[in-house]
Image (cartoon, rainbow, N blue to C red; front, side):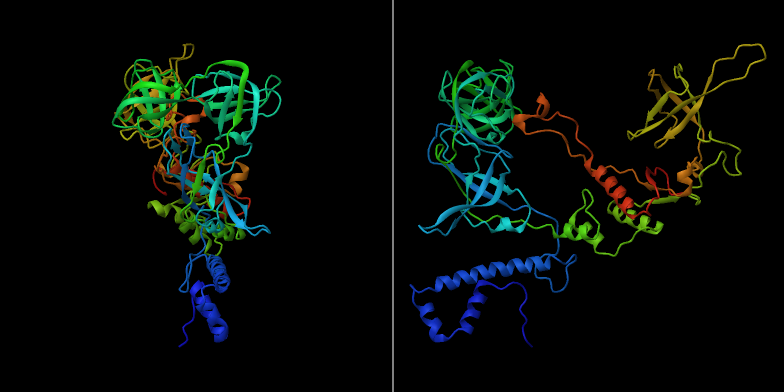
Length: 603
């Protein structure tokens, strides 16, 4: 039986093939003589092997689901290539350098053919610094600098070792005189440039400014923001208010981004890095004095001196500046010992888009793969229910489908069924309460159960009758209408939102019967075609601060690093968003629907 080749051709297989199809007298000198031109053949084999591998990956990625002859991964979502660079310097050892994540790009360089010899060229592949690295004064490196490709795809995996060697640096060498220096109160100081070029550009962020004239001559300052020009100036450099401290000994140590306080001065800083007895900090507020400091993680240190202060010397139109070149002036070198890996084209999403089935928010590859691998299951009520349950099965739950006119969603037109002659007022929950009743008719009320769940409603009062000619007596609290939530119960406290009345609940009547919950009034559009899908109340992960910025340029000048906004329950929101989008894509055209929380059961 013939052994059929599976998978891509390798370099060795291609060389063996070359030997088998060429005359022995031709290939023997090439193989046996060290100075022969066999390198050209080996190079061709290497290149063809790379092409063969990529062809194999691309063709196998056209399969949504893996099959028995799979030789490479099936279709998947987009992924970015990553690698770790070695960062070091050969000079400028007295300068503190911070390579902040998100600020800097690394260029891919290759050697190309030139008439006078190899020519260094850029390929256009860029990698973003993914984790911050710091070189404190005296530290030559190397230190790790993790980077990630700015775009997904396998092409970024082909960057050979030692080809990610240069930081992109637009505006390098820009310089001018006549700038004004102004101290700030937070993480930045400001340098107002002259109105004539050169002036700041947005791409200067992350680079370093050298002050070569004026009261602050000799200072290197990290640019962490720029402001646009006005009629009065050519733009503003926002530079990091960093201080370099000498300590007499550190106990416990500090970590990057840790908050450090100085009780005696009231100043607060952020730890950036250390080397020997020197450590670099970024001002949050205040000015450090030569007194003890302590970090949030328990580390302590005593400051002996400042090599440079977080404060600059104010000056007006006497400061000269220059944007420093990373490699030529700061002697920075970068190398990638290994090729990047992990970059993948988003073939799965492309196939899904062709089928008009885009990926839902938060949908992982495996769930998305299974969803788009089956023929379209849409329009019918059963399809809506199947699609909803396919999502909820992940958390062991199921959906409840209610169609207008069916027993689970009868609707209401001025009355209910034969059990009771009520209309519109069928949802009152009779209730008795204790204490002084300061509730008002129509006031929004709520109660909280032992699990912290809220039940809300509207306070309802009855008007007792009075004999003819007599004034009407005061209204009497009768209960709560329009109840939403798990329900009121004796022992809870009924709280009024408007006037703050707090009354213990003594008893609770039956109120709305479960089978009457969907005896509701429908408008003309809804009663012709409308459905509701009941979903469980889910409690999934909350992922912390949802709207913030890096530690040394906090959004909206928040005082504390970790106190801006309060995050979002992304797990819960993702689940509900997937349900809504799936149902919206499955429903019959023109038929409206709504999601609701099913607190009871599908009855």
